[in-house]
Structures are given as C-alpha cells and as structure tokens.
Amino acid sequence: MSIVAGFDVGSLSTKSVIIKNNKLVGSAIIKSGPKPVESANKVLQKLLDETGIAQTDIKSAVGTGYGREKIAFIEYAISEISCHAKGAQWFIPSARTIIDIGGQDCKVIKLDNEGNIKKFITNDKCASGTGRFLDVMAKVMNIDVSELGKLSQKSTKPISFASICTVWAQADVIKHINSRRPAEDICAGINVAMANRVAMLTNAIKVENDICMTGGVAKNQGVVKALSSILGCRIKKVKKADPQLIGAIGAALFAQEKL
Amino acid sequence: MKTAGCDIGSRTAKAVIFENNNIITSAVIPAKLDPVESSEAVIKMALEQAELKMENIEKIVGTGYGQQEIPFAHRLESEIVCHAKGAWWNIPTARMVIDIGGQDSKAIKIDKNGKVVRYTYNDKCASGTGRFLEIMADALQVELDEMGAVGKTFTEKLNISNQCVIFAETEVVSLINDEKDVADILNALHISLANRVASLARSLTIEQDIIMTGGVAKNSGVFDALSDGIGFPVKSLDGIDPQINGALGAAIIASEL
Image 1: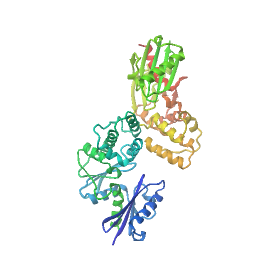
Image 2: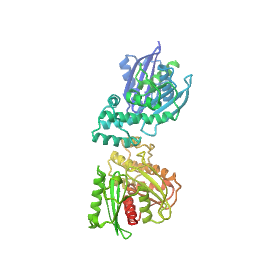
Image 3: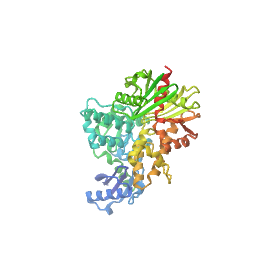
Image 4: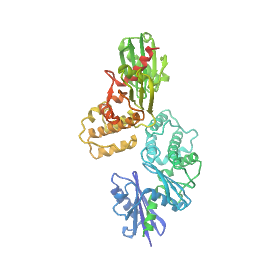
C-alpha cells in the first residue's frame, strides 16, 4: 500500500493532497499565512484530520509552489511548472498546453507528445491576468470571488475596459457601479478582461491542442468561456478534481514515482 | 490682451490667467465628477482671484483629459503641446519635459523654439503615475503632500521590487508588518516611481535641460530620485507651481491666437 502526499504552498492559498495506490483519496485547502512553514504545517494537520491518515503512514511527500523550499516535512521540492504539467496530464493525457492561473501569477506551459515540458512563459510582474485581478474586482463588487463566474452568465452587454491595468480597471468598475450598470454585465466584463490578458500571454507561446486550465481561476466558467472564444479552441476542464489542486496532485505523483 | 488656459486633468483642474507675457493668477482644484463643472469652478476661482469677469478674457485654450467638455474654450490643444510650451516659456533652455500627472506620465522632447520634437507616454499602467503615490499614501496613512518631506528623513535603504502598483502595495503592507520605518518605505517608493518614469524618458534620447512638471514634481523625494534614475540633473520650473504648467502652456498658446 503506497500513500504519498503533495503540498503546494502558493502566495494566496496552500493546497495538499493524498494519493493512495494511484488514487486521489483526500485534499485540503487553506489560506496562506505570511509564513510558508506555518501554512504547510497547518494544511498538513487539516489533511491528516480530514483523511484520518497518520503522518507516519505517508511514505513520501513532495512540495511545490512559491513557498516549497520552506516546507519542513517533504523529501523533495519540485517547481510548479513541473508539478502542474504532471498533474494536468494525469487527468488529461492529451494536454499539450496548460494554462495555470494562480493567485499572483499566470503560467503557460507547452508539452511535447511525450508529455515533456517544451517551453513555458510566466507573468508575475503585472497583477492583471492573475487571480489577484479577480480578487480586487470581487472586493469592489462586494461579492465573493467564486461568484464572478456564475453572476456573469446572465450578462447580455459586458462592460469593456480601456486598459488592462488592475488599478485603472478597478476605477472603471467603480464608475460602472455608480452608474448602476447591472452586476452581471460588470462581472462579465471583468472575466473577459481577465481572459484577454491571459490570452496575450498564451498567444506569445502559440497554443497547441489540447488546452487544459489549472489553478483556482479555472473554476470561473466566465473566464474559461471567454478565454476559449478568444483563443478559438476548446479548453478541457479537469472534472475529477478541483483544478486548484493540480499542482499538489502533480507533487504527490512525483512523490509516488520516487518511492 | 488677457488670455486663459484651462487644464482639466483626471485628478485636478487647473486654470491660469495670462497677460502681457505674465501670469496674473492661477488656480488648482480637485476634479469633480463632471468635467464641465470642474472647468467652470476652476475658471471662476481664477477670475475671482484676479478680480476679472469672463468677458475680460479674450481667448481661452483648453487642454487635459477633459478638454472636450470645457464649454468656454475657444480652442483645444493637446497636453503634450501645452506642457512643452509652458516649460519652454519659463525655462527657454528646456529641451525635455517630464510630466507626471494623476493618471499618466509623459516625456516630451522640444526644440529651441519650444516645439514638440518627439514624445512618449504611459497611461496604460498605473505604475509611474501619480496614482501610484495616492495608493501608497493611503496604505501608509501619510498625506500626499507630506510624502516627499517624510521620505527625506529615511535612514535605512529599502527596496521595492515590484513595479505593479497592486503587487507593490502588498510589498508595502508586508514592510509595515515587518515594522519598517514609514520614512524608509517612502524613500524606496519614491525611487521606484522615479525609476519607472526614468525608463520611459530614456526611451527618447536624453537632452538637457530636463524639466519636471505635474503635481508629482512637488514631491522632493521623487524629484531627486528622477535625476538619479535618468543620470542627468532634473530642474524644476522657475517660481511656478509645476502642477499648473499645462494650463500655463494653454494660456500662452491662447495669447498667440
């Protein structure tokens, strides 16, 4: 019986999973605190509590994410790029382009036919096109970020933005709220703006089918739909797991291989 | 002949009344939601200060982002041309004007006659604009017009690594949590803003004299850091509020109509 764990300590959330005999058996997600060590310890505790598995039963653990070097209880630290590629292919073996939108960055990874990483490109310089953009907008709209996708679906006339900058877009959203534009049109405009920015990055690396989206933003149907229409290709969704867990799953898969 | 210039910016509205190659008066007010109201309020203030009436002014030129809405302008002129004109009128040796406004920044090269040769600007990204300072003033709970002076009292050299306003704000919050001194954080922010604008300016070949205009020029921290960032000394306008430079240029252009 092989029990392995993967930990993804991100800038905004910390994720962990347990894989037992090549099956996902448990997961936990918490908000990241200021110290990655503490976030990792906390998520481990939650994971153990929820699965009823003892820490000593975990044969191997791999960490990823920006705080990966700080995790105390892992055997290896592996880059997010590798872990996302690994995790995405586990669910969608035909994936050749992976778009991962994290809390404070966005990555596009290209794979060859064997699933090796061919190329990747990252934006962590500009908040636009990252999860942060949606967080800022949701806050102004006074809704939870998870509602942005659903709310936008009823929209008939999405608002448009003059600039991609999060700061200017925020000012535009406030203006639209004050002029009583329906919330669905504002939300839809936010999702389209987000998708446009991600498409800029994606197009710089030339997409190849199949495209798979990972990270928390993949849960926002509005962004996924807009992105797939801008790119002109269908985006395959991971259905059997929360897309936010893909990095942690990839890490656990690496741990399993290293047994 | 009395003329006026009216500069309706994104954050403030400015007016200058001009006669016989002299500034009679100037006014600056925070911009209102409606640019029409802003322009009427600021010109009224300037007229009252000069004890004049609208009919005493022969020509008025409008500029700034809200220029289309100025009901009393005889002509409209771009901010680029107005800033070039104002700075050159004040300092004839000016060959480059760097203007940091509330929501944009511009670098303008001018010839010896004050004509615009080339320019570049950023209004796509809030970094490198006055908005950067406003957001940081808020985060640090410092008054906007005190930032420069407070920053000057820094003791420790800190570094803000993010250009993006959103990410830099997060960095500032964590510096506050690390109990870093406000003056030290401000100094780092001023350098960061100046470097962003310096790289915009350097995309044109630098030529002296370089004059800094716009509201941000009143922040001595950014002003001094800009010289360091560009690698050449930056000058301020001679005896004129740098924020009224655009309106001044407009008033001068009006006098030439």
